Length: 215
Image 1 (cartoon, rainbow, N blue to C red):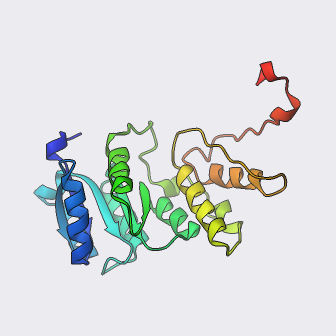
Image 2: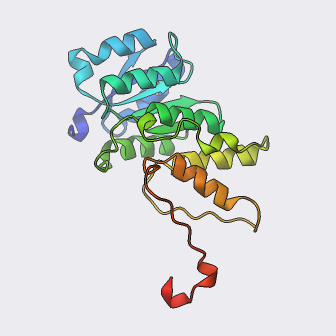
Image 3: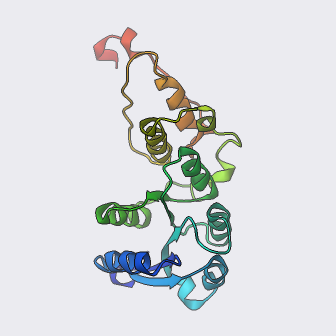
């Protein structure tokens, strides 16, 4: 991993105002930012001297030249270990799942708060990835994630699915709370199916029937 003052970020974005903002925020923590305006230039840049120095990539969902998820997949095929963050105005959980299946490290909804952006960059570049988890997520996730079977139009529902989809990629304990019969187990199964551990067994234990000292 490059030293803090040597980290180079490639920003794939054709919006000058947003590019300036993200570059300024990244600079606060020692990042240098290389801005490219379209998918073709981004792919070509990977093979350059600067491209070999990259520590992370941020791309806008509406980057010219290619579908964002297709671009993520292409970039990951060329540089599997390079963290990629996607910027979007969409809160669709299905888009979040699709982006992660393509290989995105994180999914940032615009307007993204400075602290949120910095946390995403820190997490992407400092967390040691467990062995075997740098392979493309498409190899680890089912072709039809269970998130796709969860239907709802409520903004709160869609936001909850987006949060769950992101949490599925992590390695921290997750607490899911709701009333009985609202679909907690279905959400748990969807998160397991969308996680890098999808091929491992899922064990569900009813702790309500266990003595406290056995839990």
